[in-house]
Image 1 (cartoon, rainbow, N blue to C red):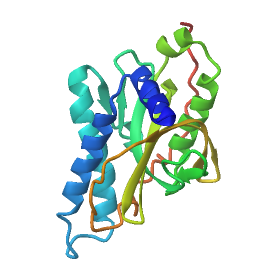
Image 2: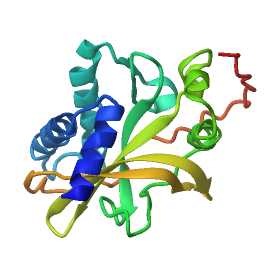
Image 3: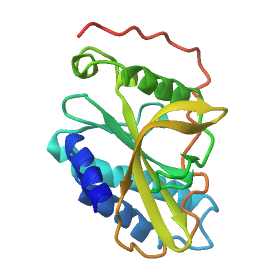
Image 4: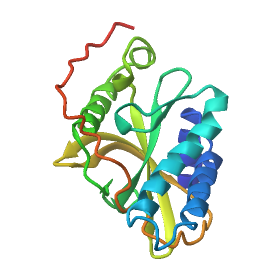
Length: 210
């Protein structure tokens, strides 16, 4: 009970209710159930990733959050610009902070820069986080999801480092207590997003004073 209360408190501090994640993940599962063997093999995974992020946006944008798909990273950004959320599939002990977890699929250079930025912002003051920076400088939390042993598990976690092509180091992990959302009937973690490596030159971004 104490851990559940702590998770709810942290979600409240991030200004997002757990019901938002319930409805977004549940809606994506319903959509994936419509896939058949005549769909492309990667369709369930891509659809689950896309629809979860879509439903997050549909719920939060009316609350003044801002949605962006820049560099194929689907994010919703808090009205103050203090943080963002994106949904991706995870591997390992998703939803159990006692076990290690990582992104299930490899990520490109754009995601690597975003994650490294998170590590820098973790050391900054709230004023520095709230004011004067580009989109790439907004700390981005990952809604990690995993279908395992007939159960969908999820957590909201703040990544700070990639080792190789996988995100696997976290500043904070918030387990999400989900109801039984049923069987999606397919592997929802297969090829769950396009490669975010834009193939162009890196652009140096300097922080503005808050």
